[in-house]
Length: 517
Image (cartoon, rainbow, N blue to C red; front, top):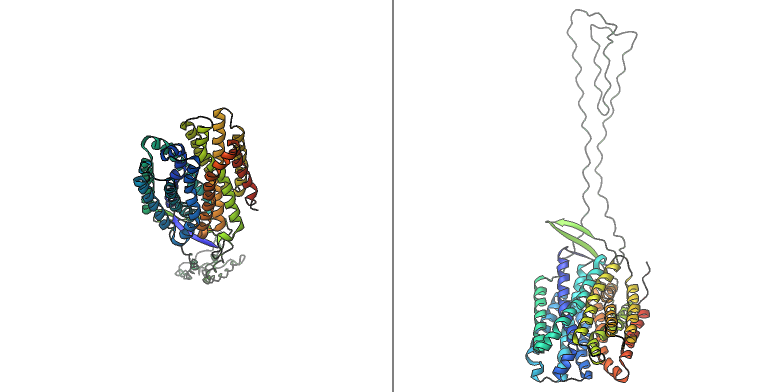
């Protein structure tokens, strides 16, 4: 099934920018708040276990709401859902700034409930912005576009990591919540002003009428015979001047009648006159050709990046066949490959959030490092992971298999996190560098996996598939902070980083095999 979309070429990049801004605003909250863990633990008087539950509330809220947001997005459209989520999340963070600061005496359960609600409301960003990108971009650029959108998570997370911890330490969490409110308000304003659905599909052109056949050259009327010369004195026949003979007719025209011999000039008996050529009959007019019958449409491949550009009013409008791999009546929740991609993504999320949430705690408690070292390690992981997402998305657009890329990233992330487990007691630069590399690789798979699961579902069902992906990813993001403290209490930091490596390695066989070309 092919859904043909017509849109202005430039506006799709505006839509992508809106998706990036919305995703970055949400990422600044879900990535920046965990890095404030040391300050939050002291300001709110939490234990390490309570801190894990509070921060895990963000991931749990997203995990429980993402599929519902995806279904609503497929039904109501990405504009309505994205606006609703951004405005509601901004209103909640504003309320937290007024009533959920440490000075307000908020309890850990209430703080966890607030962060759970923030994750549940902000989860609308994942499916809505992803479906907008899927709708506006064809498969030839969809990997790059989705990777750029997913890069907003580490980019926005980097902003949160760089800004929120010092802001919390200097001005408290009331200022942190107000800054997050401003981020959501700006993204909602851009969505309201610029985000829209693509225009209706351009109707198929009727077959061109056949050109009228050219009429044949008109036949020239026969020229009249030369009049006879008046009688005069007889001229002696010159032997060098033969008698006038009939001129041959021009091809395609009737022959002119032969001029009679001059009355005073007798014909030469030795040379008979040349016989006149018969006139060629005029070519009959070609009958008007009937119009060619419309060619029946051929089968369209699921990933065909065919594009046609038509200039209208000085702007280029592009008609792109958007593949829908799953029939409209079938839910992507019934597709086994969709589930395998989602579960592999959940396993790859474990090392990502282990590094994001507990790097600061580990370096502070086990190595005695300051917050600057932890922020630098997480910042490298976030920014490097964003660059890796763009590179992998561009590579898969040029012919690379997305599933193979996910498998390779799983192997590399497992090796890096295993190195971090071995280097727990190594010099601080080596330990921090190993964690930064492991976090970078654990951030690199998002764009490719989100694109793959959306393509498997098709453009009409992309919201549901992306909701499932978000549920799996943020479910793991909730479980990881909750599971690490008891694991740490029973074992050591070496076991924590080793378990993160094992989770990344398990994602390799779970990913579906590469597509056959």
